[in-house]
Image 1 (cartoon, helix red, strand yellow):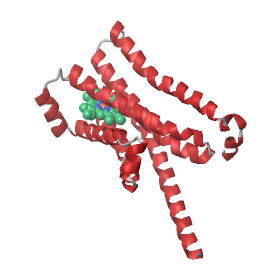
Image 2 (tube, rainbow, N blue to C red):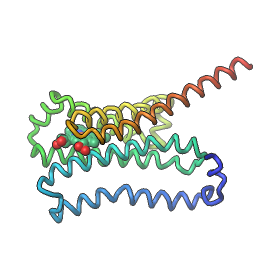
Image 3 (tube, rainbow, N blue to C red):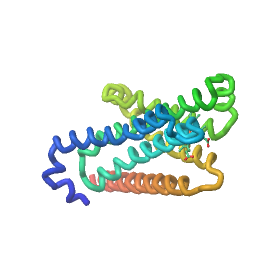
Image 4 (cartoon, rainbow, N blue to C red):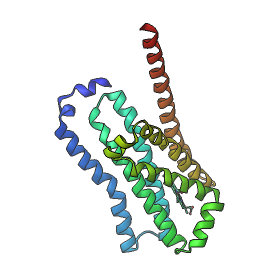
Length: 215
Ligand code: HEM
């Protein structure tokens, strides 16, 4: 797969600029369709629930896609993929915030005490809320300036993305009662990403130890 990075087209920065614009537009499309559906009232019998489900699904998909960028970059050697991780991560936050807004405004009609007790007392809402807080913390600290300011702590904080993904999956598992297909599908993807991460980490640790011994 590494040979991909030798293809002249994929080494051209212009290619990656265009690719980023196209991926940005594609990631925005679900929002455009949902907005159109809401305005034209074509979201079915329960539009509020449909909006809640779709924004939640897209938040999870974007989160998993952003997590897949590092393995893809390492396996293919395509460094141009790198900025996509942040872009897709911010899209995950965008859809998660929309999901929370839909829940507060359309499902609970801004009844603040009910929203508060849901967050504190209903476990699937609690884990969703914690996942959202983690995504927000990562979004706020995703700039280059914050990266410099936080130093090594930045990396530690951004490792929490895996916790956010696991909580989002738990949130989904809690909601799905009969149809487990989505949970198994997204769960398998997350599991493979975690295994990849663990294996590459162990490899890096071993290489470092071997180098230290050689000195
Ligand atoms: C404050 C945080 C959150 C609240 C209050 C919340 C609330 C909800 C609610 C009320 C539903 C619909 C349940 C139903 O009617 O069956 C739902 C579904 C869902 N949420 Fe969340 N959520 C939150 C955070 C998140 C986050 C951060 C993610 C993903 C990154 C997420 C992903 C999902 C998914 C995938 C579904 C299920 C869609 C389906 O059934 O296919 N949620 N959430």
